[in-house]
Image (cartoon, rainbow over all chains, first blue to last red; front, side, top):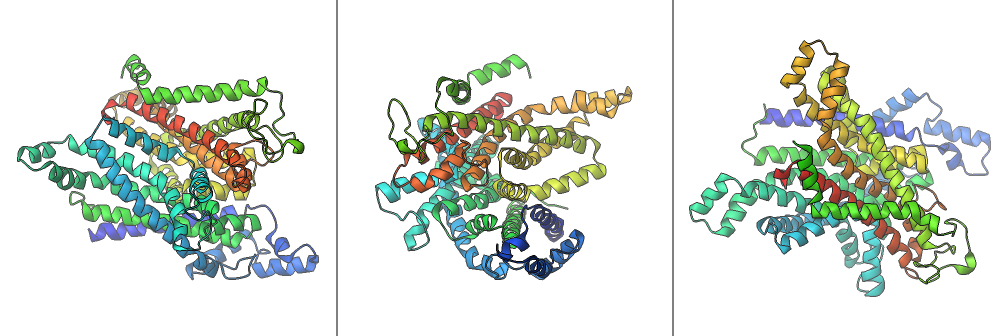
Length: 306
Length: 277
């Protein structure tokens, strides 16, 4: 077990390195000259040259790459070219908002998604199943940005019960969290339904029923516990989509998280911040998948990796 | 599996046929629609901005006095073009790469899988955002960016099939007869791994449309005044308080197209493997 855990953790190191490399390559394809942008329209060529030197943009590409990795290893993501603050503090100021939004959404998604999936599977091919399955596929098909806007029209403009944007009071997270959770609810419900159907057809469920176990006990203790394993993987995998969706949701609701920071920074051509946010989101996704795999190995006693 | 039984199962799959119906309607509307109406989708007419729906303008006009329905119909062409273009890139690069990777194995397989791991570490929309930010906005770059994000799924799927197909007796027989690796790949490995790929391609069409429109919404996609659904949604966002139909309609169109591809994809999967239903 320990060998597996250690190996699994070590295997994600090259992936993180690959992610950092890809981001470096992408950022250096960005059109526009950051030195010129920072210097402003009235700058002399000498000013632009000085800033270029300060940022290290006058060095050869491979040298910039090595110093990028070196600084990364020390937790240094560079300096924002827009605000001139360290990128880490720019991100730190926003990350909690995104974490809060993502956490609330995932809780909603797991609670509603698993419950809906179990209900649909146990009432297979009834009107209830049709309704849940239909809602679930609608959930994974609806554009998150449009859903957000429609909820704003309904709850903020027509009914005037919730704020349309910003992170002011305690109610301001409600609409963004529901919006962001929608896709995951649909996804988790679909996976839970098919995992439950698979398990419900197996011998041990019939045995449990034959022993005279109550239907509730059969469903929750026997079926759901086994069906949850693939669902755990699903939850981990779609966490990436959730983080991606957060970028769009934060833009819709002017939620001050790192997604909005990313989009704003692209328009400011603030490439150190773009680099930092993309890196943080990718690494967060890698870590969540790592945790999912580890949880899976711990939870399922049948899995004994060499 | 006999082919005719597959078609019977697909044709009797109600939600898949609903998806096909919606897609037919979209295709027809975006092909013929613009021909029937002589309103220019980009010409401005500020005197007639924000008109409510009327017989002359069934969905009203936008902030620059352009007919919303006409723009929607032209936008449909772009949406389908972006979807098919992006998935074609994913298919044409992902399928051969996956087949080679799984069939040949070795260092090529190692390298491909590590690169795929890295790409999959990025949420789809995030990678597309980063790529478009690097390449610049516009129709061509959106297709390329979204196309790249759809490659890994094809690679993984075809590789898995190739791994099992290469061990099958008929492939061994072909090899024993001296058939070249290329021929085995083209005649046996790729054709026999296509069934799940077709399901994947259909689902990817929905995903590609969703991501491309998301880029448009953020202002990073197809640029105004071109009538792309996501871009239309993004640029009419500011009028949400005064004229919410302008945000309702393009989003509904995106939703409809994505839902239709997802229903069809689910139907194809059920028809190919009824046990999973």
